[in-house]
Length: 518
Ligand code: FAD
Ligand code: DLZ
Ligand code: SF4
Image 1 (cartoon, rainbow, N blue to C red):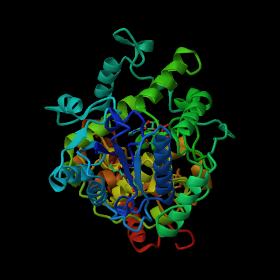
Image 2: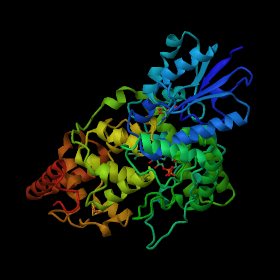
Image 3: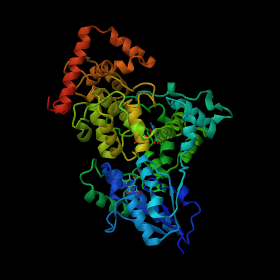
């Protein structure tokens, strides 16, 4: 007798998933599908597709080993219709289940599709809440009601109180909510973080890699070497390594950047969290346990927990509270195309070259590279939000629109006019010089303010403020830089305009920014 068809999407690879609860092994079937629509709606990095397809296949194997019946559609199945709706309809026609059970999706576009499934199939489709997140969409909506601007720090404090993480009764452990004053140190010279464990591809991953090499050869990024974990067991090992080897230094060097060091002390767990191999709760538990055992200091553990309990939950709540209107705003009216070197890495800007390099090699860049190099440059250069958003959504193994969009549209580009952050994260070359060693290997000089050798971030920063004064000058948090701008002589302001116009014009025709072409 047919039971329920339990449809598990590619970023729902958690044994505790709500749609798997109450599963009847005798009657139910789990459906999983590899479809071209998901792999190509943006042309994801090759490693991202390989990671997800391999993780999906391993997850299906795990369910089968547990006695669950799984219908798994591979990408090269000749009957594959290559969309969620098409594959679900085909499975329903074949198996005649009495109902479909699924968990709400991560992305707005998929939810729009999902809402039509019940009518299209003619059987009940039960959409369950995704309770892997610590803040339900409805709980965030309640918190957000009546607020024009959302501030992460206030949300985070409520989450600490609600969940009890790093709390001593009603008070935050250590007497403060945030220890960032102790974080953000520069790396000592010749600093070498411990090496990372890489997970050698097994037979399933190798088969998927061959498929990706053949089918997605024109997608961005290197497929090899591939070292991501593709099972929950290995993702837990990666978490264990991080807590032991890197968490103690996470706070100190959270904002540091170093040439040739792609990972420093970051956790590299976002792909696992976002695909469901790890759960936010167990990651926060592991970090707090390290603090309570005296194995990691509070500044590091609080800083790390804030990223997950605070930022991750916050951007997800904001996404669902504000979509689809959120994606459509362009507060600073930015219209420039995305420079070609975001794809090629072929540029004289050493910091951008490093950040694009790790992105191509690893489908990964750490937060400060994303925000203060790649995001900051696009902000200063006036790149159109949708162009940069497409790039960020396809290049990282951890990118899904619910987390990518608020970070790019709101945090990096201020395209939401301040819903997410109170001011743009705009910075000159001095910030990058302070937090990295990139400038020593650069054709430009971060100390020079004008002329052909000057770091372009320097004049672009002031030009950005000048161009956007109508929208930003009244912001109390921007008072200082605008007072400095106002105090500049007309000749200096004209020089900034001329340098910026020449650089940006060169970017548009490819003459500046690529080595050997100026
Ligand atoms: P760590 O530095 O070790 O941080 C620990 C965890 O905290 C991360 O794994 C992640 O789950 C969470 N976290 C940290 N910062 C954020 C944040 N701002 N928003 C949400 N979660 C956060 N994160 C994604 O997961 N997917 C994206 O597509 C993505 N795009 C980004 C785009 C831009 C422009 C910026 C500025 C940030 C983006 N982030 C994104 C957030 C953050 O940069 C990544 O989560 C982080 O770099 C992933 O590496 P990690 O696992 O080593 O993180
Ligand atoms: C990202 C992705 C890719 C590349 N391919 C698939 C796929 O073939 N099948 C699948 O179920 N999910 C895939 N995903 C993840 C989905 O895009 C993700 O589940 C939706 O964006 C909903 O959040
Ligand atoms: Fe980047 Fe400017 Fe430093 Fe070069 S000098 S690495 S462009 S910040």
